[in-house]
Image (cartoon, rainbow, N blue to C red; front, side, top):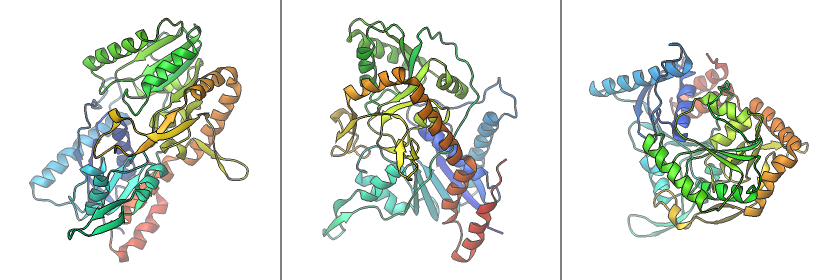
Length: 431
């Protein structure tokens, strides 16, 4: 029998954010093997994002509420364990690499990775120094981590050519998610609607998305753009700020007949599912400059909604399906793009380096893609259905939980115990 290891999960498990979703996936994978892990949690705040809470309207035994209860129990258990002088066998740290710490004999890093073409040197330095294995969410992230090289200096001042990551990197994608639709209180009076689910920041390219949409459908009363967005959080203050920001942009575009809808604040998971499946919804739009993975794109694809996006960065792991010759082909309404240096306002020293690059969607191609979704709707929906079928078959919870746990298991036992651990992974049963 394998040894049960004391594991500290250091992550934003209660955050309403992409990293929060990533953290909860990891927790569910670990919970699928309770005989292997004694779980403890150190919850991290994640910027200004809100926190998930229990829903009093749900049954007390619902998965959502049970998971939140479990997280709080593990937070208390970790605090008590530490106060009593207890140690941890290993840590799983779900954050950006510059925040990795050596807090256990074995430390596993799990990060969304990078949306550009270059990893900051501090990410590589911290990962090499304290992380035994790095797990990322996409092959784009793995490729950029492995290909990024610097000229560095050792402690004696000697130049080290092509210094880079030495920690092994593995990729684990997300499992498919199909939530039960829950109708939202939104009056969609337009019949050709498009959806954007993105935080409003430089990387997500929301400004150009709105501007180009209005330009293309300026005279079209049937066209609508639903924006599920915020600036930083789901607070009332953020809603006011987002509304003012949106109105200023729209005022600068002159008169238009198409309609822009703003959705702000917390909505249930089933609410997005309802939007993805709404009969008037033509596509989800995402022309961000880069994605570590692209969860809204993935969720929309799981629901069978056509996607309008660039064929670059993290989403390439799931927007492609093999053709008859085995070649991976994007099954989306593709937008042409150019790879160029990141904009100066987007530079974030230690995260997004000034000499890194990412994708810039081409305006004319984006507008053509929107028209294609309306004029060739049948074909676009057929492509989306084909992609949906492929994703639901390939990206299963059982396989991805086992894959994630397997990478943790690599460092959880001595060599003589490893064979027993590896053999036990084949018998995973999900509750």
